[in-house]
Amino acid sequence: MLTLAPFAFAHPTGNMITVGDHVLWSYINPINDPDHHACIMIWEKNSEPKVFLQSEYSATDYMLYNDQDDIYIIERRHQETTQSFEFRLLKATIDRKVEVIWDWSKDEWRIGEGGFFMLSDNQMIFGKYPEIYSLRKYGRPQKYFDIGRSIRRIRAVENNLILLLGENACYLTRQDGSIVKQWNQLIDEKIKDAPLNRNQIFDVDYKKGNLLIAYWGKRSFEWIDKSGERQTLIQQSEPLTPHWVALWNNNKLLFSSELIFDGSTPQPRLILMDNTGKSNVIWN
Image (spheres, rainbow, N blue to C red):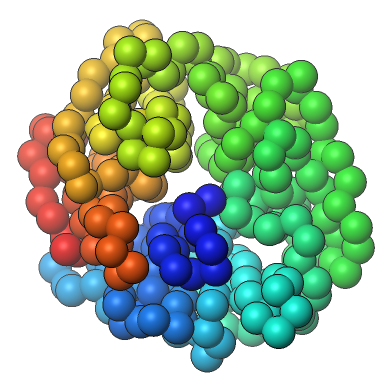
């Protein structure tokens, strides 16, 4: 989503998930690696973040989804000789060796970049603007359902529901695409100084009627409670830019990075906010 002119400036493509007592997110290791070797970081309370998985390939990214304790990982690599992408699907748990369940295939769709989840080990659902697709192992993508709106990102949430991020709205749907709840007018049209001139929502998460938002264009993390009341949790300033969010028990995980545009990897900042509003930086 933020990759410009192959890796001259590349923010790690990916997302953040929670698995039991652990938080996992994708990045690059080492952070300023010019060859862009992707990694997955892992953290639990009262510890320091560490590398959970390191890609052996350059020009890679990881995208994550978990079904209870099972962690599904899309690994994508860029083939410079052919200027094309390939992906494979890995499966792991926190304490079990990672296994390959789909081997390398050509990736013409940038699969996983707009979010994904698994219906089984042999079928995934992924978002690719502006649609939602179903993909069977080594098959071709087919439309999963159409809600009549352009979709930027998808996320599996509680009770087998799907959270869909649109242009200026968010939709909570069932697996057949029927809308359970929606949030409209998420974007403040008065914003004039959005990073890269993109006044957009970057990521959302949902739990028990509440919506957590990473608002890229406003450099803020925001919260809409079940009654519809909206508040700014953290207002950041340049160069910090919100990227990913995740709800974790009664906590909020808020991930941003410093976009400097000097050719280096954006420096990350991950904040844990508890239910009292107290926040701590856990990776910086």
